Image (cartoon, rainbow, N blue to C red; front, side, top):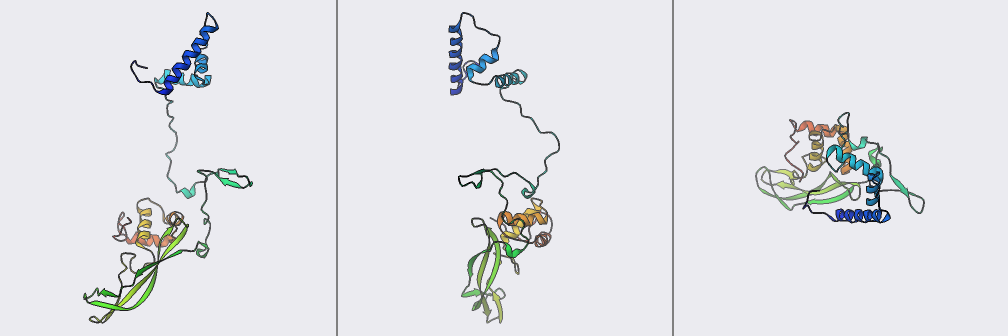
Length: 257
């Protein structure tokens, strides 16, 4: 250690302990044996003799105090979906004799293996209001009054707190334009594309999983359900991706926040 360098608390403890051990050896006899220096250092520092030898060997070969990192040889690891990994369950037993999972233990998705949609958890129904009394006609700009109201259900990203899907039940108004003599509905294009059963958020996320993350359609469908609790058939995801045009462009201009 160069002179003038600051010594931390642990280094000061080592100095005091070495001095105490060397004083004990001096008081034990007029002659101090130097045949086992590694053993003396291990005794003074309260370490194992093998540990001291490993530290000294590393320092003599590399001039460093830290052990060199060993790089793994072989094939470059390939990223795989987490659902393909098989891990062991770390568990312990509580007072009642029941197995309890510890921190970091693998917990499989309780819905894995379900093939019938009816067996999946029931969705949370969230009401959404677009029931306007007056609205502007998209054809002529005339203000039209509400004629009647209707309902539309959209599948949104699920409720992860309850681990269940989430559906938006939208109540929207239908209007009659006395100038055009045409009916039109309240605009819902900011929530979902016309005729779609899924919100823009679901569509954007599904397309990104395929285009940006490179997931095939079937794993992307499972990813949406496992991590976001929204069920989308893989063929529907394929239609969305192909409708997006060139690679990297979404199926529409909307983006998730």
